[in-house]
Picture 1 (cartoon, helix red, strand yellow):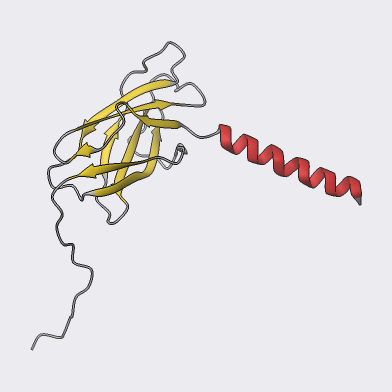
Picture 2 (cartoon, one colour; picture 1 turned 120 degrees about the vertical axis):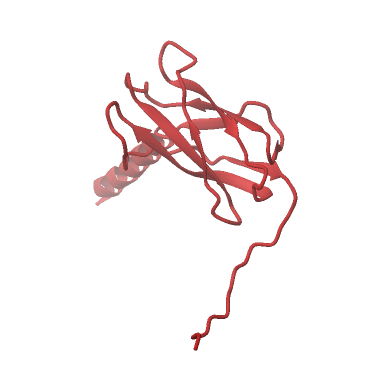
Length: 144
């Protein structure tokens, strides 16, 4: 029984360690808030080399609403094909507040769409912009 318990604990530790190493590390190029209508630059470190001909798309969105912005990887910044600088622009009409990564899609060479994803570290950033109201409910009735 003790052996079984020890094995169970060992399996949980191995799974936890391997899960932590399977995430892409993402951080801001320059710490601080991003301005609506301005550029954004992310440093990305993959746990494994990106295969030749492959690329990834990072979808960022506000926490308060779904306004997904697509940022596409370019060429790696190192010879190991694990480090990237991903840039783009946050729209002028961006929802201000805390943003996060919705998903990272991995496109292998020759694919036009995919369900492959890369798991990022927990990463958030703030967008500064003009606040505006977002409708969250509606009264609907049958028109006569």
